[in-house]
Length: 198
Image: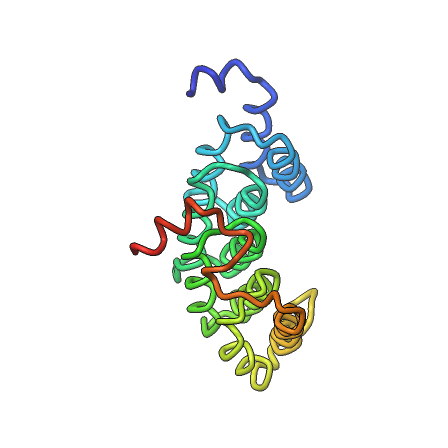
């Protein structure tokens, strides 16, 4: 794989840029990486998510994985969310990235992290569960909506985000489309089989 990637100078350049020092360059590289969705770059993006030198690099890698196909992307994002030693920005971005590309186990991880000590993690887990329309998340989301007034810089309170997630879920329920994680339209059938046995 390394030899094949070595022949693609643009991919090598993007991966180097993803691990760079300048925020603008790092995020431009992340955006192009997920647009290209080159399967040869996926292991290297995951490596940056796990071992990148800077919070910015790891966060950008989580962003890049949002739309990259490949079975290893989703577990890598899940591990980042669950890693209490990881920076909240990385964990929050990992949660956001799971909103439209995940498996059944992802729902459980997001629900579990709704009570994380980090307001950023709680905020983005609430966002992702609202996008998933997971009605199994309604009880913990209502608790956040009632009690969590912490503001996430650049956004709004966790409470407000939890209320938005609740509205999304309730709208689906009213339309007869509300679903638990086992009925999630974003969870591929192949993921569901593997997740149920865990």
